[in-house]
Length: 311
Image 1: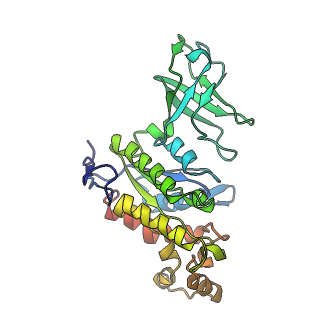
Image 2: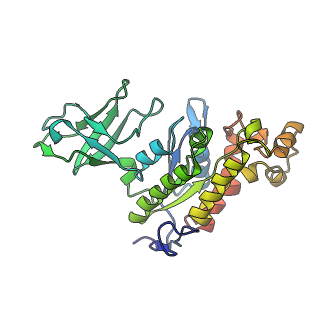
């Protein structure tokens, strides 16, 4: 084993999460999420927290699997923690490589944005699951062979979820759930299911909290402020030092002080309202490339190092 096994404090969902101190740092990092880790399109390619982290960790492969507008049920279905279960007509994977429309499915790992097909394994066979514009899904065998009988709810595991190279996952995945005001008691258990999936594979993770939007309902004293704070507190209780609170840092003068910069009047107004300074934002909720650099240099990389996930 490349690194020390997980050491639960008492049980899977114990307060503070799990303790693990790997003996050998990660070789690969996979970043899952929605439009926040997707980043900013610059000259035809995305620049994001993954590209910043890759520059700082050239010996480690950093891959970003981010799709705009997705929620945690979509994201963690792609990442493995929320099972994607499928059914086929006659409960049969056919012998040919012709696509077959799924008879049933348990969720939506793909949505209107992002990739519309993913390689996967079903009943030990390599397949491609594709989403059609009508929101139907198809299964296509990668190679022909004897037909295979499957159950009415057979587990489909996407290659990006079972990739043994990605020893550490980073999630920045909660913003759209929170924008839709989903109960915190529904959001955190989804992330806990992802953590348990990784634990079974002896892999590791960092959970990244939300940035609060530049809108009155999420300002200090706003109608949604306590709700946002309650999510970060619940995630920190669930995951301990593996949950990274972003907003309190980005809504402060510290990033300016670290870089010997002077905040503008607008920046100071944002900070007074308890939301990230607009110096680091390209709109009311998404970071710009400077903001991505602050998050990685000041928060994510030090957290990965403190957890001994990277050297």
